[in-house]
Amino acid sequence: MLIVSIAAFSGWRSMFPKFMWTIVFCPLGMGGAMGGLINAFIVDRIYGRRAVHFVAILSVLVLGACNNLCYNLDLVFGWFGAQDHFWWWHWRYLGVWFVGYFNGRMMFTDEGQKSLADLGV
Image (cartoon, rainbow, N blue to C red; front, side, top):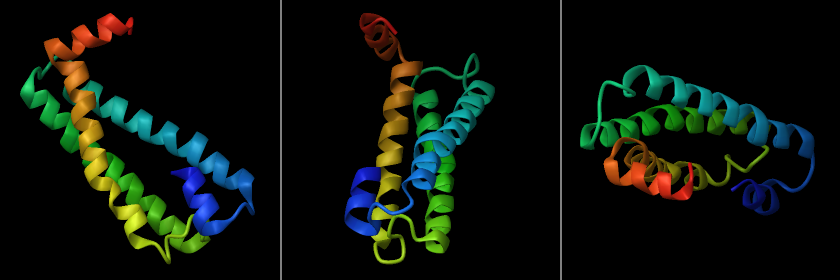
């Protein structure tokens, strides 16, 4: 996504702040928030289908809020083409739900944990 946004929409100018924001700060914030919320509300409390759906909904709320923040910041900075490419940013909510669902399925179902164990995770 970063390479497409840079190559197609904004060019290669100001690469250091783009790199730091998208590869360092944003993932640390999103990962920390999601990990903390999953640990606080789901681990050792909910298991199975309910946990899978809860992780998917939590992903949409947290990662969707982060996507919305990044979209609004990009409207100010113009790094990734948000002004001209609205749908490039907002089609991701469906993808975030699917990733959250898959993540929850892997962590909170017997089949998912078996798959992770087979991978050595």
